[in-house]
Length: 436
Image (cartoon, rainbow, N blue to C red):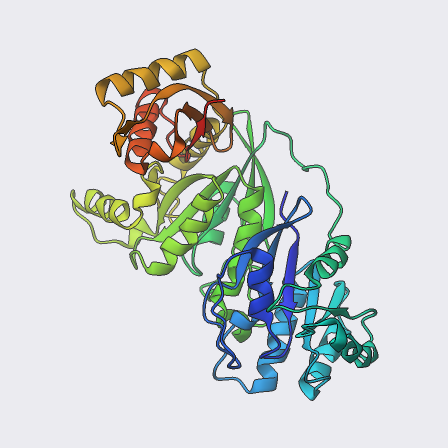
């Protein structure tokens, strides 16, 4: 299931990034007392009372060539497009400004629930400053202090009350769900059409022309698939084209619903930094991953070209060493038929369970081959291991002291597990725990 989304909206310098960081629990946005300074990551996952959600700080959207009020309007409209709940943030010390009223006018048009937060109410004596904010027409204003963390619980309680009700997954476990992610214009929609064998998705050479994530059902060799196309049109044209970071949210929501994620690259243009960021989202989410090099028909090649490109991919995507690489052309449909079998294999590996006794045989053989490390005279002792989860396969290794498990030895164990069981296409996770 895709997580609910909260967007924080408001004019500059009301404390959006500070509140964002407080809710996320780490300093992921740059905070400075200068309007428009947010430059860093504008979305993250968070949790409140056992409810997971994604949260966006719209201040991170930079549209520097647009007038000040236009930017505010665009950011509010983007939030209305994407969020399940909007936190409308104001500054209690400064009162209601013309910019606040502009944001309010835009939010009046949305059916998305709006929760009004009045920031910079740093002590109880300042609480009377909130009463003017009732006039904005969004019900009870919630007094909060981003700098001190006061009042955020009540604000999040109200926001969580508006989360969409959990729905049962619409597809059974036997259905393989996969999504296509990648920067605009790498041919995601064309590839969906090539797989389906029909023009079900509008294809255009203009980056960003797919309206929304579209589910397409497919059965091949008695296996059912659902393709989630995440291209996601930038609905306001220039606005969305200017906000690559923001459009990532749609990919995140589709990734959450997927078993397998296809990271689509442009074989003609090669690899750029944005490709690595996009792939990183799927890796962090623990999804099975396949790297798809599209437009291979347009590449001038000899017998060494594919091997050289594969080496380049491995060099750029070192964190995806487990991901198979498929070269194809959506336009000519060449090698497209090779894709679904790889998707099926990756999905099966993503859900694979291994027997505990076999797993421990592999671990003990690995330790015999490469003894555990020592630190300050103490040697890591591994007692036993067990698989605790699938999607992705996750293992707990019980040891004497978890801090003695160096990441390099953890990587060694991962490699030995992969040698024994394959797990091609899926990340695996290993956790060291102290034996009780």
